[in-house]
Image 1 (tube, helix red, strand yellow):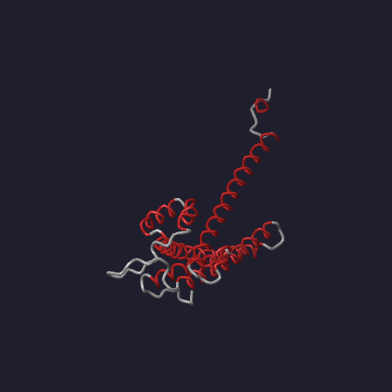
Image 2 (cartoon, helix red, strand yellow):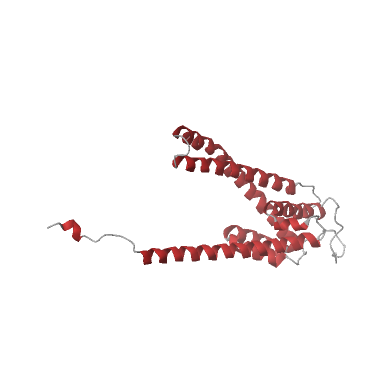
Length: 216
């Protein structure tokens, strides 16, 4: 008697497999929809803030790399008009975004080369070369990503301070911990300019925004 034939075999029938695939696709769809809604809310809010404050090319808020320029411009304008400082965060954000995109493209290129090599399209020697060469842009991409994230939150803090200074710290901290909340913080700031007031002793508060430097 063959006892091995009587042991249960861990296999998935077609119906169970399709159920798992359906669950996975449903979750993926929900995540994509949430990301799309968050992107729309964030872009709409950032566009409204930039347009109201006279920042040029406010429509760039709808473009991934361009939104970095607009966010940096909002931060630079706040630093210039309220804090009396000249900063170049919009340029830094744009450069970091462009460098990050280039490094990511190069890293993905090496990854695809490894996949093609695994399929037998490329020789083994080129697989090893691609694996070693892909480490450098990947590591640089991580460093640039961290620096970009730091400047991103610095610009976010300036945006929050220019719109709702009393809740700026809470918005920043909660946005870092719960990134899903950030678009709604932008939405809450969309029509506010409470922090765009130049602090001067014995002077009444501004009833409108200070004059915008044409450079913005």
